[in-house]
Image 1 (spheres, helix red, strand yellow):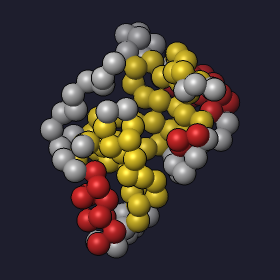
Image 2 (image 1 turned 180 degrees about the vertical axis):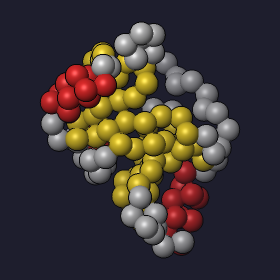
Image 3 (image 1 turned 60 degrees about the vertical axis):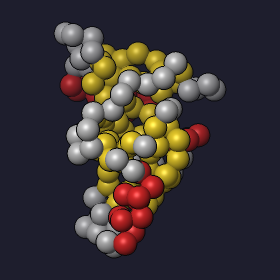
Image 4 (image 1 turned 90 degrees about the horizontal axis):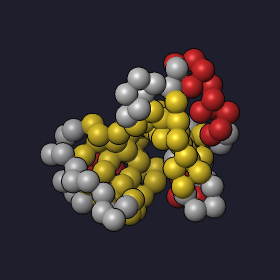
Length: 127
């Protein structure tokens, strides 16, 4: 099954947190913020879809720092749509930033994690 079409480049479309102890951090946020969660099957383990307590809509993810996420920093990460992930990753390097993970496939899209020259981190997603 394919993933939904991404909105136009420049939009922030997702946020998640990747940490070594995902269940403990999931429980922390569920208790502090009031979120709920559902399991997200990753094959040999589950990551977590974080859901709004009133609507049940998925609002974020909390992920284990293992498997495909082993190189993702432990912090809340926004996902920004770009037209060309590989091209944007190269422009990041050219402008003094770093590519921390990827580019690589994530479902039907390409994905990478960049760090800007000031040290802030974001994910890029697109073609």
